[in-house]
Length: 418
Image 1: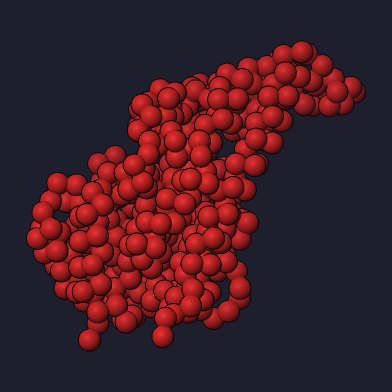
Image 2: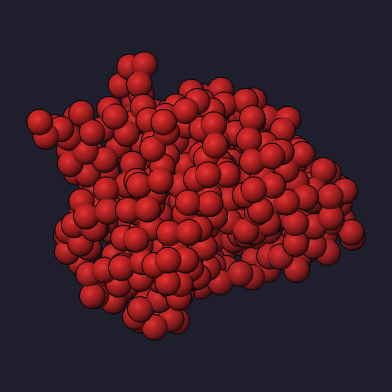
């Protein structure tokens, strides 16, 4: 008999839960980071996808029904209209800085100057509101004119925004929030829609490692690299201040699309991308001092909230694998980008479930025989004894649909546990 969508959701959840718990499931689970792959699959531009949510969701539903993963990441979404309203300087998006076939890009910059550490540490709310926001959003330049809140006690909030420039900034923010609210509701509808088709709606927000937040959003790579040498105390103080804010991300999991049935087979994944902690960005000594404490705290917080950390280890973590052995066993899903997965299996295979390593390059330029051979090798070696989820090494934006099908079929063929 054909399985119902509810049967498929339960079956897929159990398969994933068993793999994360380092048990042997019925077969190797398959994770597809579909991201912007649907544009190639559906023959549309990224700009069209971002402008027409119903059409974009229809395409992604069709591809998921064809490839039948156990769970998925995406599809990519970007609120171009809201970013245009705010005149955001820190992103480029299709038709606005990049071509119509390219997804959005973060524009790294030194959005907090080295001399501004004290201002942020002493009054973070005021710095973000009066300095950071107008620096990255041209549409709210008027926030620079808002006086310090304590100085408006006599006149109240009306006095704070009496300047026409400040009032215009407020109006822009209100317009942007209203627009983004409608956009987000439309995007969040995709998860429940696909759960009704048999695909678990299990992924939400995890946390943010403080060093990544500073390097990504405030100081940039160059700035944080210099800060580790020139002002390490300031950098560590800011990390300490940020940590309580970034260890609560998974608290909003349910509102971001995840299920919370309370049943034994319930599964919630808190996704966190790790940007600057890999081998190429800092020494092991720097990793121990500036990155690992925050990362470990974020992972433990997600676990303590009853959510499974789904950590994307970008770049190579070959030199960091021994640190990951300190983490709780059978509680974490690690998705690896350029790490040697065969080495990872040896070192942390009894600590965390391992996902990844099918190279996007192979799904772009390989032959069907090469794809099948590498799929089998991953399953035979990394999948041995369970604790493995098949996935690509990064998002599938530029994969060839025919080679993706070869990979999916080979995973099902070779991934059955005897």
